[in-house]
Amino acid sequence: MPSDKETIVIIGAGIVGVSTAYFTAKRLAKQYAEAERPRVVLLEQCEPGCSASGKSGGFLARHWSDGTDTEQLAQFSYDLHAKLAQEHNGSERWGYRPLNTFCAEIDRIPVMPAKQHKAVHQRSEAESVVTSIEVIAARAHSSSSVTTLEYSNPSTPSTSLDNDNQQTSTHGSISVPDVGGVKEVAPQVVPWLKTSLVNKLRQVGDTGSTAQVDPLKLTRTLLAEAKSYGLEHIRGKVIDVAETGYRPPIIELSIDSKLPKIRSAGNEQPNVLNIMNATHAESINVKAKKMGTTKPYIVLLDQGQDIPADKIVVACGAWVTSCLRWEAFRDVSASQIPIQGLRVHYLLAKPKEQIPAQAVFAEINGTVYSGEDAIEIYPRPDGSVFICGEALDDPEMPPHNPFEPVYSKRATGRLKQIVNDVTSALPFDMIQYGLACHLPVHAQGIPVISKVPSSKALYIAAGHGCWGILNGPATGLAVSELLVDGECTSLDLSNFRLDRWY
Image 1 (cartoon, rainbow, N blue to C red):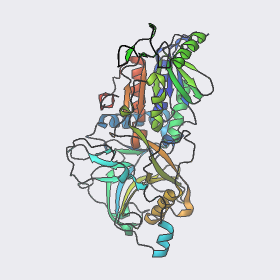
Image 2 (image 1 turned 180 degrees about the vertical axis):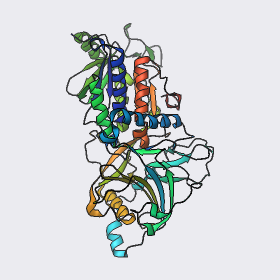
Image 3 (image 1 turned 90 degrees about the vertical axis):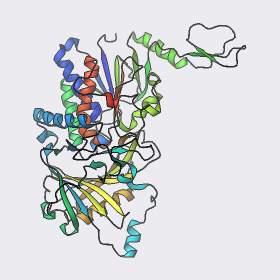
Image 4 (image 1 turned 135 degrees about the vertical axis):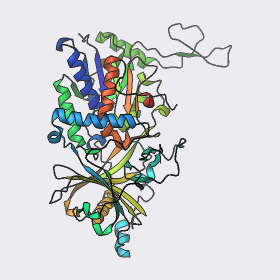
């Protein structure tokens, strides 16, 4: 017999989905005895953190979203990271630590001989390999004393902004505050860069305002903690989410009318041609009857482990538009979740000597590569160094399986060369591997954290872009409040509602 317990299903085990599962399971464990506790199920077709949540830099900044729609979310989540680290020994378990952050302007890298340059840098992907600066244009959103930036998609018309002409600096996948008013420091402050090439070095964050985590370790640690509160983790691919009791409308073509009329099912009349196929909806109703469930939804998995559910959260990052094919999400349009996967490349290096806790955003002007490059370098407490930069503006969707190889050897090779040119601490033999992941980027530059307005209990949380690790915990807490309490009291989610733009 099916359980009468309320069942909450969360689809996607990245940082947003896992954070939602963690806070939901924790809240329910405090409110209910185990025998009466609602069931919380986390679904993931691969491994937890198998895409962007396990393959990103893990950089955290408290004030870099000030003046934008995500200001409250970012500040709240930055503080929440510190609380989680204190509660669960995050410094040891997922490498949480505050750090100093610098913006390095490198004027020019010496040009190599023409033949060598042609052999190394001629690219078959010349039309598609670009820096993130070209893929997502940063835009000023406030005239506050420290101007911060927000992403916009170049294919989408920009909305009116407070200060379109203000000089700003963008670096790789992260937008950096305007450095015009930031005092310069000596290049020797970051000695592991090639200081002779550093034209300007500015400190744009300190241990009170910037920090870092290892995002894969964070995601999997929160998952383990959620399991201790009763979370069920099931590996499986969702092929449909259906609404029980739903019957699609009938479209009737009357002999006396040239225009079709739509009416509810169940009152068939003579001379009516039903051109809406209701077979699938009827099969779902039959399935629900056989399962003996009265729950409003059924989640259908590829291996047949169908799950009746009361509430469903879709938090599958760059794959969130998959829900557009699911019957229960029929009222959600593609224009409401204009989220695409931006393919960003990264390297992981293991230098002989550990690099200090100094994150560097390096802007390289006038290079032999493409005129301007921007990379991010994050030394980690375990001695490894994460580097990211090269992005591909892909017209196609991310692969169905996040484990499928998606990286460009040309892009990772180019990134290796740039890193080798700016620091002697990370030569080629210190770089262990280079890969890529898909960042879920919303066309308006802000995530969706919302209930589907016309639904009984469907929710979407996705589109966090490069700030997914920073904002993931706060998003999870906010969604858990929607699920358990029916409203979010910790944050104002009006900026992130599904129907805000369309």
